[in-house]
Length: 407
Ligand code: NIG
Ligand code: FE
Image 1: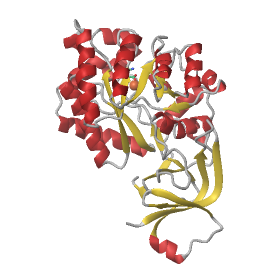
Image 2: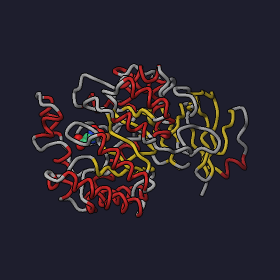
Image 3: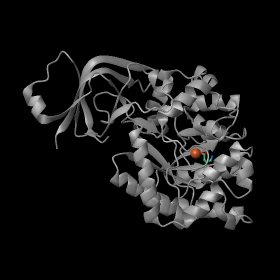
Image 4: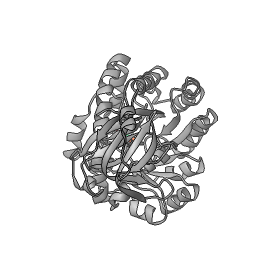
């Protein structure tokens, strides 16, 4: 296999993993990638000689910019059917919780996913994951949580495993059996929690079908006390933990994330000031996904400025799912975040690369330097602020995954 040399790079942007929002710029350079790993960054003046050209595939960046591949650290890409009817209902005045109480929402997705075969689920999810890649995502978290039986949760996680094996993108699997309580356990919540703790978590951890465990802590979903029990069990089985917290109400889920040493607390529209400080104290990542507030028409957004000004470390993700954010594109989420979260382009790009890596516990990516993963984008921009500014546009011209040009 030939290795890759990207030359004629106009600007190379590399986030500093230790400094939130800091991105270094190198003008006029080339990058060599060998065995999937960045081998060197060379100034343009250093002539690339014939033996080098023979050994490497050459990609001419034509003076464009190179960034690390985007890392989308919160997404639900495996599901059976769209919920565009719920989008219409919301736009006609119903709220997310009202639609859920009437049998829509997660329960709607659960019914449809249970009725679909693993192969069909694989086929439709595969198409979606390829769309992420086109918008520059080279690492994507993927949650279960629309099955809510042992077999259906495992079916989802097996689909994620197959996608990971087949496609040129890394999928990071998360078990979200505590997304909702299934209909058949409506009168026996404790029965379902015991199934999660005593059967699902041990089995999924043992078969290495997930690396982390998530839960939806929210009014009508799971309480703090239930979250503590379920996630403590997950930790005992070696899984990392994370929480959907403070999305629709202020519920203290973020404080629990900090208490349990979670990788991240996610959503955070209604996070309390004291939980912001507790998370900062513990180094828990603030995973922001304002696409969800935007898409379900909420007036409140996560208090990103307050979090950043106090010293919090943020990731930015799509929360791609059929209900609250049907969007593959991290660049579009950057546009929403620039407008509603008042984040700078440097903060946004950092959060969608180095921040995503941090939220997933990955130390080998999210920056461009010797020894880091060869996951890169060639983008048709001169300045980073063109990314959030270019609303809904795709400025990604090439996607390189592990040193191979895949788009
Ligand atoms: O992240 N908040 C809970 N889970 C998803 C929504 C799931 C759904 O509506 O299907 C979210 O917003
Ligand atoms: Fe989510």
